[in-house]
Length: 477
Ligand SMILES: *Cc1c(COP(=O)(O)O)cnc(C)c1O
Image (cartoon, rainbow, N blue to C red; front, side, top):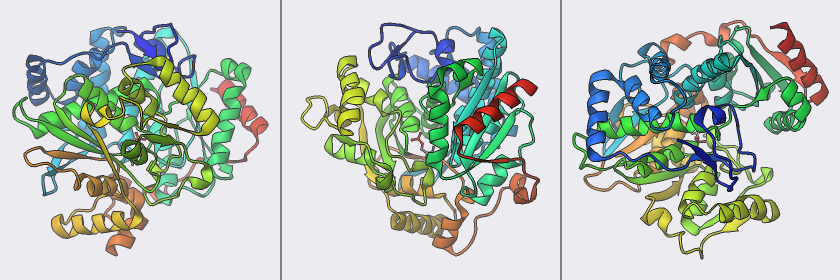
């Protein structure tokens, strides 16, 4: 299995070479040269494997179709170590539960940080440790977070040999629960840096450090952002697990609704569908930041400026552009790398937008690739949380509520609609309080987390100071 760039760079790479990288050298995103195909007999075998051996064994089967440069026994051991009941809370890892009206919820948020990013990040932590040890290398992850990604990365990398994490966040701006989650980590290799400023200041610091190629090479600076192919690949597995749990026969179809921001989660669904998993429809659900809904409705993709990006009550979907979207557009255009490059590098940087409404392949987004979309507002979110609570006495988080709202618009008779649960309500307690007049219950392992001692270094948004801090902590460990 070799990987190519969506912008046409001639080089082909193996999985472990792109594992530790971000963008391809031409600025494109990596995709496999072809999607491995799953026929009926193969899907039957996967059904038996999930039933008899569980999620980790299914993960191994799916991942090994894309990874041929890690010996099978090692890859199987990495999957077994990652997907355990102890880490993900249930034996099923991603159990389904009914929510009425043809809807099912797939629980992806019972990992260490109570958001679906753990599903991929936990595997990434183990893959990084394995590959760095094999190469005798080290990696220093330098990132910016406003919440979910940073904490998922820290919980995945804590205590891992060969990896350090330097995570910046806007000082005092994350929810108390999120601050407690990140800052209570006492592991030597985890460094929390609270920046006097807003999230954009943190991102600017990351960009400035990444643009200093000499510093970046000397201190082996890397990232774990959502364009990483290994993260996306790990997410493909739970589409298989969701499908297999929702059906008893391979002749049945299932649809998925995905609360979306950077298009990473639903892009994994697209990959599963391209492999032949019988997915009927992939429903993109956005919040008020509706870049993606606008594209699927009109064919126009328009990147938003920062003043045009709304702060919402489903904050992990507050994006101005969808960083994984280029992968889908490449497939939509019949893998035409020249056009993909023109759209994403020329037209976006010149005009901030492109328009495929007149392109003969735009209609295929729905017809051939099964994509539809919808959006949800703060009022929709509150109403959905209320109606689910009234009907099922169950609390859902704000992002999942955006999914349920849009999913209800696309249910077809006879086809189960699986909504991906991307976080637990306790992470967004304020909005739950607003909707229901009561706070969500806190899972046992998080009771009292706000009271734990905190380990965080507060700094100004000063590139020189940050570099000194990183250099100092790279040498001492
Ligand atoms: C990251 C995140 C999303 C968006 O996922 P993408 O892969 O960026 O589309 C949705 N909900 C929650 C809770 C998240 O943390």
